Image (cartoon, rainbow, N blue to C red; front, side, top):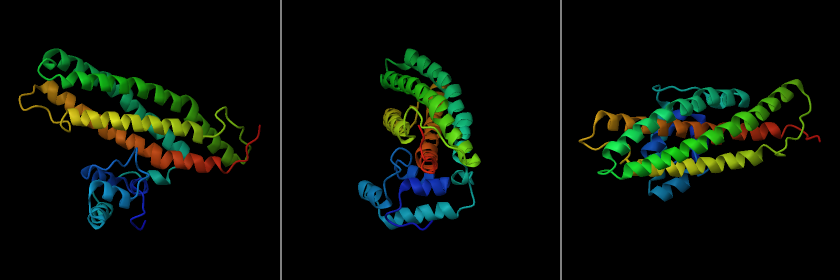
Length: 243
């Protein structure tokens, strides 16, 4: 892929996930707002386009931190991967993080009142992500798999209750924006996940887990917004709807 000022951030990360680290370094949202171009984000962040492009090219040419070529995967394969990897991660890690935050609020909440807001935000995030993931696992992902099977067999595809895959995708992407805002707030409240100097091991562990959760969620959203959803929309376009 040749980079230009009109290349979108989502396209760049979809082509090579190693570039995600560069956008994180420059505080550029590559998952929820991946539709923005290099030109747009550079103006927003007051960055020289040539400087950002140079960093991106170095990341792309690096042999370190090789990742899967998700862009080459089929839509149903990506959906399975997201369910088994990222959905499972949220289900397993969220209760543990909440336990740590419960303890921190009880022990340090009076001196560090921001812990209570962090707890509230993360609790809402977990609740909403659970609903979000069920919508994907029970409705959207199964339809993607049916499309893939029908496409492979050359059979017709019945029109789903939501009429077009683009309709639930729009809702899912709105959810992603909400989570992006929530974790930007958590990052601000935690000083980018940096515990106080005098903090105990529980404090350090909680912030480390929040940071890891944030990174995993960014990749999760990127895979859906910039790779899976476009593939699903294109796949749907190959069918003539029948009643």
